Image (cartoon, rainbow, N blue to C red; front, side, top):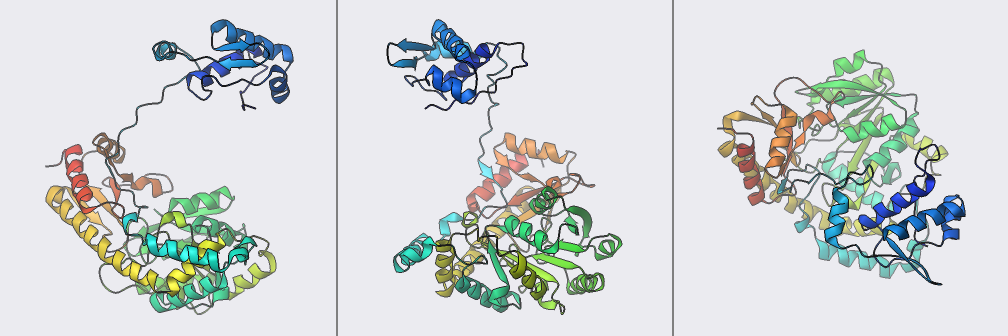
Length: 468
């Protein structure tokens, strides 16, 4: 049966049969119900909507009278075709139901910081390893796996983290999940909802949203040129600190060793926890890779988060958390009831991908590629925008922050860029109060763009913002 789900208000001054008839006319005009499609029988629709048969009969009579449907003897009611000429006339009449959406601007260049270059993803290798997993272990994948994730994948992650990020852990401390937000939800349950979280301000807003949706108190802790201001963290009542020390989001500064030790000391003195989100630690273009904060903690009060979204593709939805042993014990006792959220086949494919050396090869290739894109962006900014802007956080990751020295609000910068088909992103979205002082700033992500698109995008920004 064709599903019709109108909202019929019995307290309205408009009769129910008119409300139903108007709804069906709206669906026909907007092609949600197509020509020659059969409407439900009067009895079935009355039962479905829990209204009287007479109400449906009256609505159908009205539709027949206006020519929207036609009754075929012993067959039912069928929708009639409305010529486009007359359909346009119907749509121009005032109606509280029919609203034409505003014309969307065409996006030519999208500086989205969450995009990666998909053209260089090793599709053939991934496809081959996926098929290998299916053929070798057919029935094995049909059952539920380990709630923590496949052990062989966790083993490879542990080896990689120790070799490249200095993270000290065993495979049983790792929990795999479908994205960082899923893992943050689990971690908040492990720590208890009575905790207060100190979050970087500005910082990654999606983490803040998850915590607030769970009813957890979140406290804005300002950042300075060295990351989260631990002196202000000490003055707050926070007992959990969420930080991005290797590449602060969105400003990109690195937390130096002195500040890191200060943060570790805060956790030890306050019996608190640190959540270290190393969301794009693989991409650093100046100096040596920064070791993870996790390796500094003697009392293991740091929860380390990582993801494959930046190093492979976002849609893979595979992230991981490294729990300190005390939290792992709590997890085993109380939270293994939560089933694994990532496909076992994807986990096995990724295991073979890492073990076979394909991930390291891919990372090396992408580092070189993104380094070239970063250089192309900085050179384009120097050529076209130069003294009118200041670049912030250009030494790592897949985005920069652009401070614009122009007498325009952040909102107008974004709007004027969009008028020229260029999509840039406001920094204010990452502040607790969605506002900040000083010159307006926008985020430019370059991972998903070609060097030509980067050049074109910056040229268009100069024109849109009317910079000399």
